[in-house]
Amino acid sequence: MGHADETTFESFVASTGNQTFRTALLLCGDWHLAEDLTQSTYAKVFASWPKVRRADNPPAYLRTVLMNTYLSHRRLRRSSETPSATLPDTALPGTDPSTRLALLDGLRALSRTDRAVLVLRYWEDRSVAQTAHDLGLSEGAVRTRTTRAAQRLRAVLDADFPDVVADRVRA
Amino acid sequence: MSTHETHDLRARFAEVVDGAGLDLDLLIDGSRRDGRRIRTRRRLTAAAACVAVAAVVVGAGSALTGRGGSTADAPYATWTGTPEPSPGQRTTTELVYPVGRPTPITGRSTAAALLDLVGQLDDGSASGIGGQGGDPAGAPAETYAVLRWKPAAGGAATPVMINVQNGFDPGPDQGADPKGYACEEGQSVEAGTCTEVGGSGKPFFSCRDDRVACTVTREDGLLVVAYEVHSGGAVDRHVDVFHPDTKLRVSVASTNASEFETRDRVRAEPPLSSEALRAVATLDVWGETLPRLWQRRGDELAPYHDYDLVGQ
Image (cartoon, rainbow over all chains, first blue to last red; front, side, top):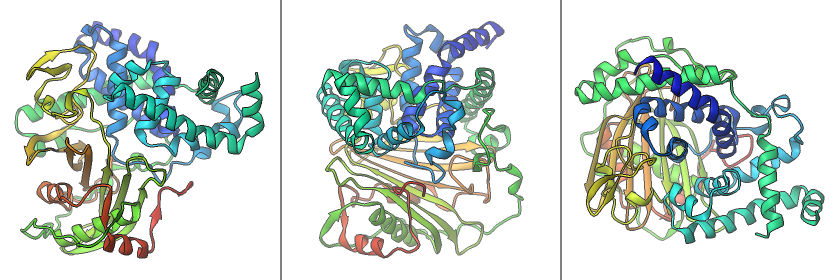
């Protein structure tokens, strides 16, 4: 790979890196795991950069690599995976730590696939059809998983923050 | 979900990750370095010299900051290079499992099963037994179990793990008819032919970028991917089995490092061979249930590390 290719890779990371990390953070619920997932993803992209660069939609390729890497991660949870130790308040200004922990706890209680479905649908704004394609599921399965996972996540949030949820629904 | 609730969930996600970011220069540097290692492994694999050579060639850890004292940062120097006895595995990989009433699979029963099966394959002792999973809500059960296996023949104890994932969907290329594994990256199977689809990575069950000594076979209708991941002398050895008819995935792994996915090598080789891992992963006992005896034994495991408990 020549210098020009590396510069292009730099600009690609610069334009997509933080969004990818935030997606990884929602998937993993752990700052360090999200760092690992993000770097593993971009390493794979770099290793295939000539092909990625020529792809019709490099960000879509990146998303596929991210999801495949996430779903292939063998261990379901590390012993060090504790929200309070991984999401320092100073790193996320303006966010209520309790709300954040409740949401991450709720996400972690879901299966990996359900978590991926919710993150793609509600964070990446992917349609049902696009999410089905990204994860290799049928559209019906995506709808079912979305409803079920959102209800389970909602139950966690309602239990911990009924007033907040009520206010937002009324708004 | 109602529109209000959808909007609320979207807002919650944004709120949680608002302001989160990485040092992108470090991310670029680390990704380049790791990406070059992946390329190196590809070349080594192509040259059929992967196992002996990759351990020398690959190196360097993650460049991202803020990892604290995780085991991923443990020094490679913990491996002293002292010769150790051979793994002492038995020559047979014929495994037996209990008969009896099936009970819903749990993290504990999975751990008991792993302990039983590894004990049939190798003389040794286990510690650090733990697990996670089983789904009381009725979703397809996913369980995980891990133990540290110390072969009687000697050498350090290292983790052996298993994931049992019911209802796993590997993607459109490998759903009902998993033949997409033979295609290259960015290709999909259409009418039995590999076709460029653009933007799509390699099929899930395939010899993807970071895999060394990788083989993909079909055995009795099962899709079996055996491979290793090398990192600074550490070898994570995996066998990943997918049942296309039932969507069951069973992934078993052994390492020569103190933990999976680290460079902290403490043995010359993982205690379990690829054949041994394959014997465990392809056993026709895995699924939504396990024999009740393993459930009982799992309930009696102590100490047992429950990864489902927050803070564990």
